[in-house]
Length: 508
Figure 1 (spheres, rainbow, N blue to C red):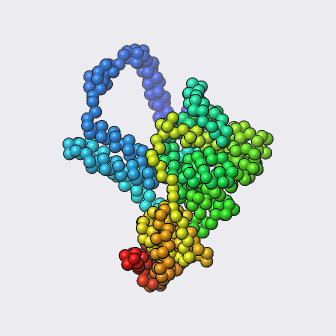
Figure 2 (figure 1 turned 60 degrees about the vertical axis):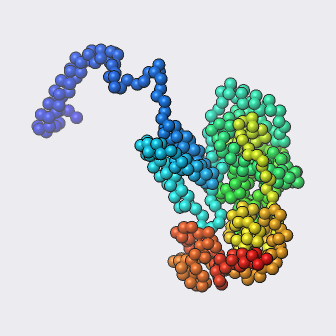
Figure 3 (figure 1 turned 90 degrees about the vertical axis):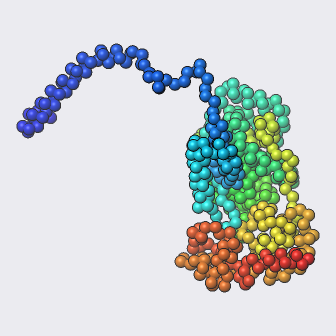
């Protein structure tokens, strides 16, 4: 558009604007030499902004700053555990950090920097714990993030030739025999490096948690005729957490999906989830892995199928036109990252697990293998009654029977096997036989309808809200929604049965 096309008033504005542009352009050209001279002249820094030179000694941190640094390290370790779903480990670290805050001498606690740090730290921990409460399960089972997400989502940072040679030499010098062949390529070596450095706390916690299962699991593997080295597979699955729950709803130490678990003979229902039973789930995992190995004739493909599913691996073999796992894994469009990382992650975990000291992994000594007595319960029974008659706590009974999803044994026609502390079987059998069935527990179960409250349900069954909450381990009533099924203690109330067992024990 030209100037002639503008109205008169706009023509005046246009001409003035063009004059300003011309004037500014001339000024810029005249000032350019001066600007170039200034930009090339060394810049002077005022005395107040000069940083400390490297020749001067750095000021020593104050005692308060040292404590802040130490406590921050503990908190960050706990935060790492919290991020990957290890709430128990995270709580221990958070408790230690808070304990250290309050156990400092007065001069440090009164330091302004330390005081500000304390407030921030406590607020952060409180925020994390509130999230746990909001996300918590209404029943006795816990919901935990998956171990695999922390490990198998790793993006490979390939090692330099020098770093790879160092890691390879460490493995080769160990002269340890493996039942599953170990390929020391860059993927495996990168995982070994990661597991012994930034992911070391995760691996160390997993191996310490799994130590008590080693004897049991390896015995099962021998019986099922699969390599004992599969003991290290849960490091990249669950960290040996019996109730680990993935985003895909895979559960237990061996991360079975519900359908696969049932195909392998495990019971999964409202009362019981045998994916969480270390012994039964391990035997099911051994049989499942053996079938996959018999099908593929290769442990790497069998492991990939355990992670991704047999159908996915079969399709990948057809697309890649090879049965070599490493060649298939090169095609990012065939295997997702988790499956590509699964085999090298397991191999690295196996290498470190068989020689932890060489990689700075500390295993607590001595390690007591898991042991228990097994008793059969012929009627639905409160776990607190079982605990009292076994001379232990309900928490211990739940630890020994993680497959139980409620605070009672299930209502079944057949007797139900329960694990109790070793050495208590004879006493328990005698006491339990003399305890009347009506004092073991009396209950019904109720499916919540839309609009129903716990108060209405309690009135219907002539019990109390607190009794229903205790029976179902409900901490947050907002989590109780229509469609859920509740255990309803009726008669004389849930605590009556616990007291009956206590009185019976005292009388004996």
